[in-house]
Length: 324
Image (cartoon, rainbow, N blue to C red; front, side, top):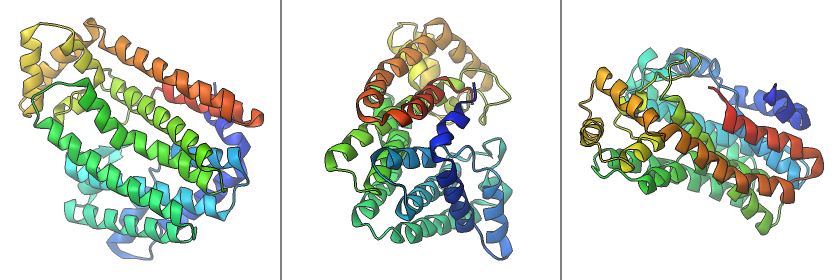
């Protein structure tokens, strides 16, 4: 099924306007900055978050330039955070291509991320909307604090599902919820509707991250990060957290501690991945996604215009079932 075509159909022309503004925002005339921005433009992905902003706006009113600039600012903030995250995580790839820090160096990557962040602020200023500026600023703070919390959890020997969801709320979920709330704000939605949209986005973002984490337990050339990459970076995600907290098999917990201190090798990661699958970690994570999806579907049924419900439902289904 072509999920993306159904999702984009109600916002097709507006999405094209967004893409034009976004591409323009990532243009520079010459030098290393021009080259680095061109590198980023070539791997912008499906841009699911701007689609969500536009859909949320259309659900509550008429999409305008305010919506477009809000969507551009959000995607620029997201892009800047990815460039900086790759430096922090020492990642070599992003969406199947060399990361900016590998293609150039850490100094260039940090400065390019700063440039994109400043361009984000410029675009949000074009909305002339104080509340949109406030929401975007809060998102930037939340994303940064979430990244720091994730680093902190790596050094914390406790294996906790609560800690995992706390990181998700401050990273992926906060971005999705801000897309929904800023989209609603851009068309003058009521405070009650903005809050409903925000909660829908939070649920979407949580599901998105759980699905993303599940990918790390399988071999696939289609996935933009190698299997076991999270463990190599010291991260324990929901499937293995479940497996470890529902088993007394001490050797696996010793391997988990090696993940935390960054001393685990590829063979040991393979053992921990296989243990996670045997203990039902993947099934548990998928069950969690479905539980959260219940609230998301309730929002679609009760708060989304009838002519947009199919697009919203397809968006949710795509997030749950996507394979990359």
